[in-house]
Image (cartoon, rainbow, N blue to C red):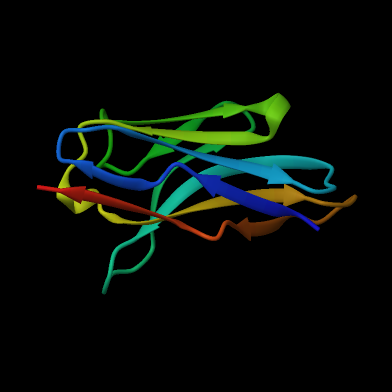
Length: 120
């Protein structure tokens, strides 16, 4: 059973920083992609950043220059360093991963979500 366990959310003032972590556990063959999404009340879930196994990364325009995604392959962990936070960054942040548990198929897995609240 593959699980994604997140940590690091919380309350921070505007301009502050937070770091989110997400560790994949269980039995699996490979991780092809790990990333972060967020969902604010009344809004659709949106991609924040992701990291592909080939080393490429992608960011939403709204977080470019402020957020940095990184991975520790040995620990099957992805991090999201968030700086210069704004109130509009407030949301539940979800870890997402594309994992191949067996031989052929790759599945999308989600973490339970962690709340990030940025006060003005």
